[in-house]
Structure formats: structure tokens, C-alpha cells
Amino acid sequence: MSTTRHVLGLLLASAALGLLPTLGLAGCGENDAGAEETGAFAFTVNRDGHQEIWVMDPDGANRTQLTGPSEPGVDASASAQPAWSPDRSLIAYSGSGDAREEDQNDLEIFVMRADGSEPRRLTHDDALDATPAWSPDGERLAFAHMTDVGKENADGVIVVMDATGSGRVEITRHPDAPDTVFDSYPAWSPDGRLIAFTRAEYTPSSIEPQIAVYTVDPSGGGERLLIEDAAEASWSPDGTRIAFTSLKDRNGETCFHECSISGEIYLARADGTGLTRLTTSEADDRSPTWSPDGRWIAFASDRSNRVDHENEIWVIGVDGDGLRRVTSNDVWDLDPHWR
Image (cartoon, rainbow, N blue to C red; front, side):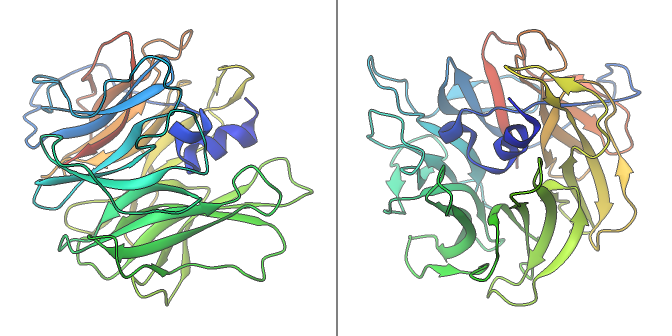
């Protein structure tokens, strides 16, 4: 895929678009010494294009499937992008529900219990609803709402709604933008005062979109640029730092279909300053998520098999030490969320 489509894969629902980008890691050997992580991972398993939600312990044990499995003849992309509720009793995710054919304008937001039971569909619209994120009090969800995906007038905004699916409010909007703009990957700050999100702006004259992380109030005010050349922001548990994905170093390339730039994981202060590059390899690292104690970052990467691009989940200390591989499978493990 081209660089533009690679970036689009970072920003839009990978389940809907079939774009599963990769990124990379640096300077540290595999070392799990002192890795005593707590909590649990929710993540996506992609098996031949069909995606389902699984959970496991931070060391990879007790791997359990929550959604699916797929039925014969079903071509829909199924379930992806899980997000734990603050009390870990629920998981929100983007899914195709009962659809049998793939349609990127027919992904919805669902919520289920942590054991996979009682799935409930919260959105009902002809659009791509993806990348859900919970408010710290568990009362609301933010998500990306993208209309007319694949068309010239495509547009993507961040929507906030009650956890029941009611009270929807668009908190980002760009009615006067001359170009296509997609807002996605919302991330609520731990104090509930800000939502970070990824914005991709496409212009007719540019080969690649401009990508940056912005913040906005949950009510829709106070929007501001936080970090340029950044995507997939993730707040530290204490709210003082942000982990994110960046393609700006062009430190390598991944050649899934056509070659495209690989990405890296970065850290920054909550105000967007003090950028620190955490990973440095020619592989493709993405989707950072913090451990509950704030000492570790988990991410998805194809570093273990860049030929077949088999994505696995890895963990690294916030100081760059203690890199270790969590999963080792013949499927793709993606979208980790640690809580």
C-alpha cells in the first residue's frame, strides 16, 4: 500500500478498510527482567481478514476469545478496537454486528460485558463508527464517526455520547475545510477535562496527509494542536504524559503490498513538549497503551516477522528497557488496550 494508505490505515478502522499498518523498536534487547505487570489486555485477533476481540493476562496467559467465531460465508470484518471501561466490567468496540458482507460504512459501536456476554449495539447509522474511548467516570464514550468513506466528500468527526448510546454530540467539526479531514482515535485524559484525537488532513496537491494530535474539551470547545506528525495518542494513568505513534522518522519501510513508511512509538509531556523516541527499528510499531502503573507501554508490531508481517503484541518500559514479546501466534494480534 502507498504511504497515504498506510497512514489512513492508522487513522481509520482497520477492520473496515483492511489496512493493517506496522511500525518499529529500538536499541534494547529482549529482556523481561523485572516485568511484573498487572491488569489485563483486551486486543484484536485478525485471522485471514476476520477480526475478533480477545483478552489475556499481561504475560500472554489465559488467552480467551470473547466475540465470534466467524460463520462460513461471512465476509464482514467482525469486531475490533476494544476499549475497557474504567472499572473493567465492560468492553466497548467497533463491529459489523450481524452483517454478512463487508461494508466500511456499516461499522457500529458496541458494548459487551468483560466476559463477552450481553453485547449491545449503541450506534445505528450509515457510517463508519470506530475507535471508542471511555470517559474516566464510565458514563460516556467518545468515538470516530466517518461518513461517505471512500468518496470525495468523506468526512470524519469525534462524537461523544452517553454509555447507553443516547445524547450524541459532535465535538469536532470542519464545515469550511476545503479538503478532506478525518478525526479519529479519541483518548480521554484521566481527569476527564480533555480528549486527545488524531486529525488527518488530505489536500489534492499532497501525496501524504498532514497528521497531528489535537485536544478538545468534551463539550467541543478549546480545540488546539498538541503534537505534529503524531497519531494514536494514549494518556499515562496519571495524565502527565502521552504515548503516540509517529511516521516522521522514516526509519524503515514495511512492504505489505506496496512499500510504505514504518512508524515508531514516542512519549511526550501532556502539553506536547519533551518528545522522546521510545522505539527505533525498521519494523512497524503502533497502537501504544499504558500499563495501569504507568511503567510500561504495550504496542503492536511486525518486528518478529517482517516478511509475512505477522503482528504481535510487545511490551517495553517507559525508560526504553525491558523489551519483551507477549504473543507468538500464526495470527495477527492488534489494538492492545491495557487496564
